[in-house]
Length: 278
Image 1 (cartoon, one colour):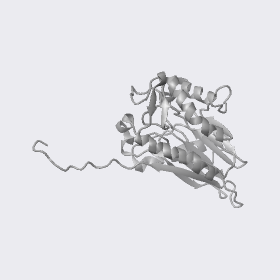
Image 2: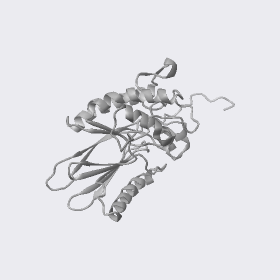
Image 3: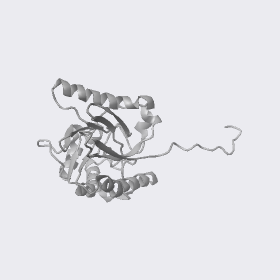
Image 4: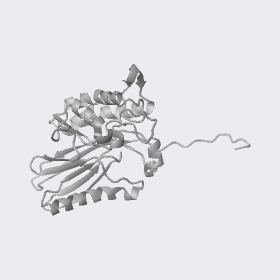
């Protein structure tokens, strides 16, 4: 999962949080709906999808909203307070997992050199890439057969008919890079950043298949989103569980269990009386 954008008035927020100077902030009605989905995802979906097995929890980046694009949509511009809220929100979910990892998000949100995310990841005991507690890119294996490649960024689009293109292109680039380096191409490619869920797959050989998945986020649409191409899209909320489904006819039968929720389009305004000057 990823793109929680904690600290934003449109990001993931529990019933109430304490910002700087002990100011208490309550969630909005829209945030309450998203928080209900967050609880359903971790309390019901993840235990069901993992079957009670130990699992690695990966946050795909943009943990906090940060101070970006001259925005005033944050509940506070105190970055440390924002990080404190994120640690409080994520700690219960990290404690359930067998291990926890963080991917480097967008510096506009994560801070230059990802200083906010490094702060949060270290406090949550995240896996380390050398001395730093987060990864630019993660390649991790499920058993002996399945390799997963996970990064935050991927090309975005404001057009529905081109939405699959970026995810397909990303997988093809991974395959070509692996071939040139005589390496192993991923079986599953995960990307974040879009706040949209999409799943592509196709055959390889001997029953093997590749999967390319854009993981949904946890943030409602804000002023910046309404300006760019995604203004016509509805955000998706949720996460993905990747498992191996043992199948004697396939070397890597991957099972992708996806939890995705979405808001509805803006309601039409009904005009009941029209004045002479309207």
